[in-house]
Image 1: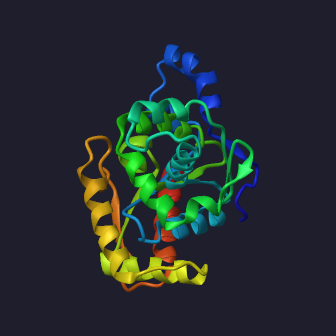
Image 2 (image 1 turned 180 degrees about the vertical axis):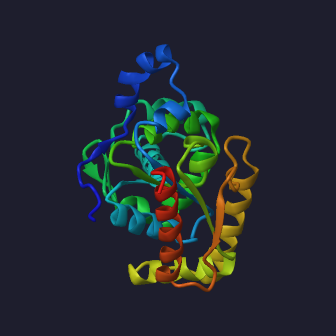
Image 3 (image 1 turned 120 degrees about the vertical axis):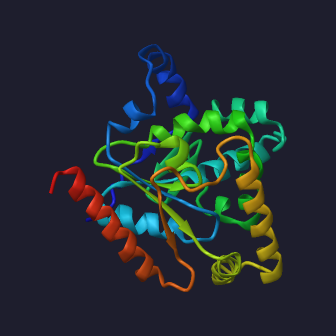
Amino acid sequence: MKQPTQPVDVSGAKQNANHDAEHEAGLDAASVTGAAPVITIDGPSGTGKGTIAGLLAAHLGWHLLDSGALYRTLALAARRRDVDLDAGPELGRLAAQVRVQLEGERVRLDGEDVSAAIRTAEAGVDASRVAVHPDVRAALLGWQRDAAVAPGLVADGRDMGSRVFPDALLKIYLDASPEERAQRRYKQLKDKGMDANLRDLVQELRVRDQRDRERSESPLQVPIAGIVVDSTSKSIDEVFLQVRDLAEAALDSAAGL
């Protein structure tokens, strides 16, 4: 099956339009995810979760949420508007002003396709910086939950199963050694014609892992009832087949089969 191609608006503008009604109705994570089935794939950077999430979404014919792309996009917007990446309240306000649309693996910021601009190594570091702020994570929580629409959603990130979609149908935590993750990132950047230093990438990943695990707001962790899948020394096909089987088993169980 093919992944839906209709754009999903997860922007601050949409969130603001619905916020008051949702607040009055007392919507929580359970009621939001109840609108459509959700499968979450969490884990540190470089584990291949984005690739696996995309393959699974295409296989199921579901929408895809790359939550990391949202943080990268907000960081890009901040850079362009000269907003300090360490100023949480200002970043939170910025999130309410910009318009972000997800269209498969493409991301639009205020109508502009920024898919390539947010995939640089610098954008990844910037995303990790803005993600530590509670104001930012609170603002983007609505963005992410807005993506849970029919026929279903595969959500890729770091706190998808632990905070954003705690009642997800299936929660996967994809892991791999820092050395292998750095090697994958190195090859990815080289294939795109970008400069990269393997030793620097390993160090950057270690620093980012520590920051993600130690942040006070939604730290990186295996979610409750999450299933750990280690992708170290495994091919993309091997990991996908393992995750696909877990997803189909979860869907069969939910259907009473």
